[in-house]
Image (cartoon, rainbow, N blue to C red; front, side):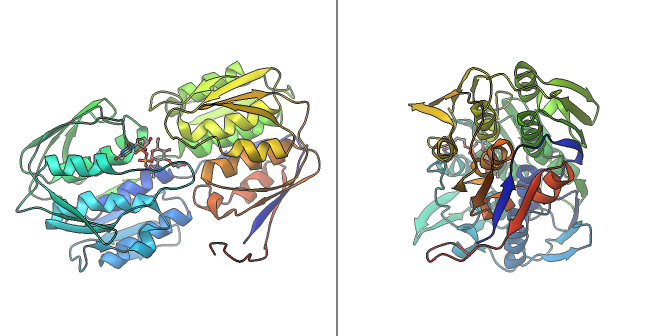
Length: 428
Ligand code: EPZ
């Protein structure tokens, strides 16, 4: 089990190019199952979750070629298998995103029921309800979702009880090939949903309103392949901005879209950062200052992103004042606070709110990552703590951050990856 060893106390400074967005790449890779033809995808991030999704597509029978820049050519003309197996789905919940495309294209799909994870139960009931509204028959047998449809799916008017990113994405992909028009109400408005819709339209789909809460999809009989480049990762960008802000440093991010991070940039300005932006770049300068505590409440886009909550919790641990962090999207996404307190943070939990009283400094310690963004918060804490922090189980980090130690080293951080010992019971 690899770990990251970090010696904190250095001010980070430098320039980084943001990678392609994990949470756009995954649904867009699933969407390549829809066209009878070849799709070429560029700017995919080199992440474990992306290779898992590529493995899943391979297991379904697509023809894949990958070039040295990880541009992926996917020919879905012939698909041999419509079953997404448990051993792949269990490692990545986003595998559920092949359900809609397989059902829409072939009239049947079997996807292992995705389990929960550290941050919550992560149900998929709204995905299934929407597909049933479009005429699918769905049963759960032996831990698998069996979905079938007699002929094409039918367009439907679907009101989502809860804003769900994955649910909106699955239904967008299913509706693209349905017979008739589908309206999704209370749809997720995240930029990654818009990126998926733009890719589907490049394949010949007729989607309007993506990015708004009502999306209309006029079904077509077939889709064709296309070439598409995935959007930059706004959460990776936000994570590095917070890491540099925590150390009082300065950073220029290239290939970062400020319009995707408006609420996050406002919070960083409230914390005392000087921020300037251009069309596709963001610059942050803390000028050596200690951040001021900020209070946040997570919400679906365009609200404050839940995927940035753990990072701001870490920032608040060494800020001036008290910050209140309220998590409204997932039921268990304040877990990183326990590990942060082991480093000398002063965080109290009241329901779904963490009350963070800023401390002069943290003390390095061995800590354990529990999920992707919680891991990022532990790395940020390690960057500001005195002494050495060892972040264990960093396979969580490798799922969502491309080459994190190289990128932080380029900013001046004292961080290195070291092989850890395999402990009985660890997921290897
Ligand atoms: C996506 O997960 C992202 N993952 C998550 O990023 C992100 O945190 C989340 O959206 C919210 O923005 C990918 O895009 C691969 P949801 P998703 O369905 O689609 C409830 C990261 O760190 N819900 O929008 O699974 C659910 O329990 C990851 O990169 C239902 O009740 O999230 C949650 O409370 C973590 N029924 C809320 O909706 C359903 O059928 C939002 O979940 C579906 C969801």
